[in-house]
Amino acid sequence: MTNIRTIAKKSGYSASTVSRFINQSGYVSDKASKEIKRIIDEMDYVPNAIARDLSKGQTFTIGVVVPHMRHPFFSELTHGIMDLAFAAEYNVLFLESQYDEKLEQKYLEKLHRKAFDALIFISRKLPLTELIKYQKYGPVVCCENPQDNPIAAAYMLRESTYQQAFEWVKQGGYSKIAIILSRPYGNSATSKIIFHSYKKVFGTFPDSNLVYTDCYNYNDGYQSAHLIARDTPDFIFGNSDDIIAGIYQYYLDNNLELPALMGQENQISGSLLKIPTIDHHLKMIGQAACELAITGAIKSVSIESEFIIR
Image (cartoon, rainbow, N blue to C red):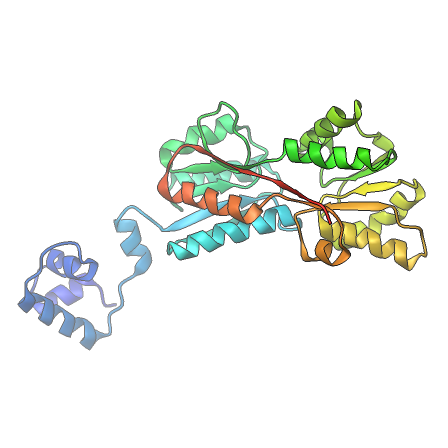
C-alpha cells in the first residue's frame, strides 16, 4: 500500500519532507516539491483524510446527540447545525439517544477518546453537571438555558412568547383549552415552561383531563384527535403545526365542529391552514450551537421566539 514512507523511498527525500509537502505544513524546496509531486502522480497516491486530520488533533466532525427525529423541534435544529457545519467543512454525526442516560454517557466518552471534536446535546437526560465534566476533552454545547451552569448554550427565549400566546387565547374568550405535548410535565423542560406560562395567564395549571402527550407528527395528531374531540375543547394548543393539521383533518373527516387552533414551529401546514403559531427560529438556534461547537467558546446565545397571528 502506498504511503508517505513509500513516496519518501522512491523520491529520495525524507518522510518528514514528504509530509510537509502533502500537508503544506512547512518549507519544501522547488526541486523536492516537483520530484515528490511526480512520484505522487505516478503512484496515484491520495492522502488518507482521516489519518491526516487525526495527526492534526482534529476529526472535523461534530457529534449531535438527539433523542429522535420525529418532532420538528429536533429536525429543524439539526438542519441549522448542518447548514453551518457544512459551510465550515465539518462533518456531522447524528447520535440517537432516546433519552437513555447510558447512551448519552457513551457519547461523552467518545468525545473523551477524540472520536469527534465537539458534542451538541439538542436534548438530554443526563444532568448538566455531567456534561460540564467533559468540556476538558472538547466543546460540549447544550440547546437549553443553562442558568448559572458554565457550559456553552444556544437556546430560545420562549416564556414571554408562550404567555403572549395564552393572553391572546384568554382575550378570545376561550376557557376549555386542550394542550398537546410530546412528553409529560415531569419529563420535559418544554412542558414545564408551557404549564407555568399557562398558569401565569389563567391563574391555574391546565386541566389534566385536557392534556395529551406522545404526539410528535401529523399521524399522531390524527390518531389522538378522537380522544380530544370526545372532551369537546373550544381551543386546541398543539406542539407543532403538523400535529394540529392532523387533528384538523380528523375533525373534517368526521364532520365535527372545529374548535379554534394554534400550532408551533411555523410550518407550511400552519401557513396553509392560516392558524396562529409560535416560531422558535430553530434553524438559527442550530446554527448558533454549531458555531459554539466549532469555536469552543463557553457562552450563552439566546434567540427570541415569535408569536405569529394569522
